[in-house]
Structures are given as structure tokens and as C-alpha cells.
Length: 129
Image (cartoon, rainbow, N blue to C red):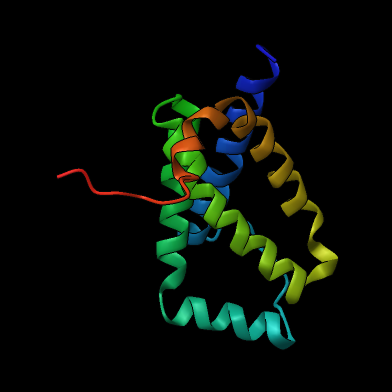
């Protein structure tokens, strides 16, 4: 695990960094999408929502690659991956394979850090005054 974890962390960071940059620079060309996928793409581009999601991906990708605030990056990427998976499950199930690879890498990176997430799973929160 000493070798696998850093490799998975850097690879996951690189994936999100490159794909996040693509949301700004459009260097990875893809064929035009049709149907609901095309409508979704048009909506996120015209509303500039793509800039927000791409920015989150770039920032978390850099954090993973430089090994800083990894727990925060993994936490944020959980939400990003949930949305990516929801998109692929509901709109484009034929292209889900890369999303599943990213999810597998996420689990490889997140599993050794699971102790940092345990405070999130509190039955009842109380405010200490």
C-alpha cells in the first residue's frame, strides 16, 4: 500500500487536473453530443457552470498531486464523482467506464484516510457552549 496509495493519489489528481483544465481550454476535442447529453452540455456551457466544476477539479487535482490537504480534496471529489456517476448512469451509461476507473482510484486513495472521515458520521451533534 505504501507504493499503490501515492501512485493512485497522483494519478487521480492528474486525471482531475487535466480534465478540469479541459473545461477552460478545450484541448481534448470530443464529437458533438446529441439528445439529453447534448442538452446537458449546452446548459452547463451557456450558464458557465462548467467553469465552477472545472475549477473545483483543477484545484482538487493539484492538491492531490502535491500531497497537500488530501483529505479535503478527497471529500470534495466525493461530491464531484457522485455527480459524474449520476450523469453517466442516467444520461450516458455507455461511457461509464472512465468514471468507474476514477471511482476505483478514489477508493484506493480514500480508504487509508477513512479515520479522518469518522467525525462526519455522528448520530447527534451537540453544541458545547
